[in-house]
Image (cartoon, rainbow, N blue to C red):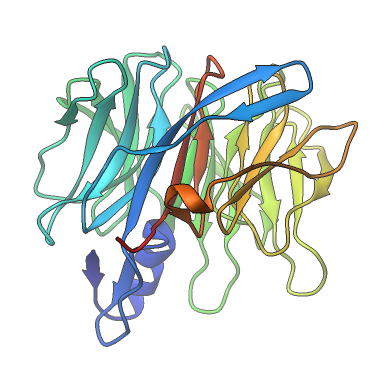
Length: 298
């Protein structure tokens, strides 16, 4: 559990999500990351039995598969003080600490070069690069506002979730690393920013104050935004499968959406120890799904 203080703490809690608390508030349940085999055969999707790969009473969140699908990077707080990036190797089932710095790191995100990953780092929530062995690869971007989440569009451009100041809404902003420019694209967005497989577009959840939440798609070249589908009720986390379907979780269940159909339940993991699903991600080869959830009481 990572504890933060004051008004800025709420901003950081938007990065941490489930498992964060502000001092003086009641602590939410700890989160765990579960890994389950996934089989996609045409329109049929099968989810195997999930296993808890973190087994930690503290904070474990924001999983990101490696490019070759051999492992999962994630942020974890294992001493009640410091949050670093860890890696779980699927074949060996070994857990390795990747970063060891004086600052906290969150939201590990693979960079286009395939040799590094970026994180949200420190109280200023800068974007920082690390090599896959955890060695420092330097500052990627520092922003006037606080960056909560990000996804790389290319070597020189990324989409970011920037926390709104005071009562302002969170915004989707495009950053250009070559020019140093930033552009606000949309307001009132959710934390899930992803590249749609095979298209290079950016998907995000729009969360208006009134009306349903919807999944939208941004073409970063034309800046055109298209609405794909309403989300499951009040759910903002999603994952893309390699063949272009969307997976969302609600309580202990997983649901699938395809452009030609509505949301369909594909798995109920409640009896297997998975509850209150939040973030989730599918491996690039489509063989695994990582799920962040509250662990069931033992």
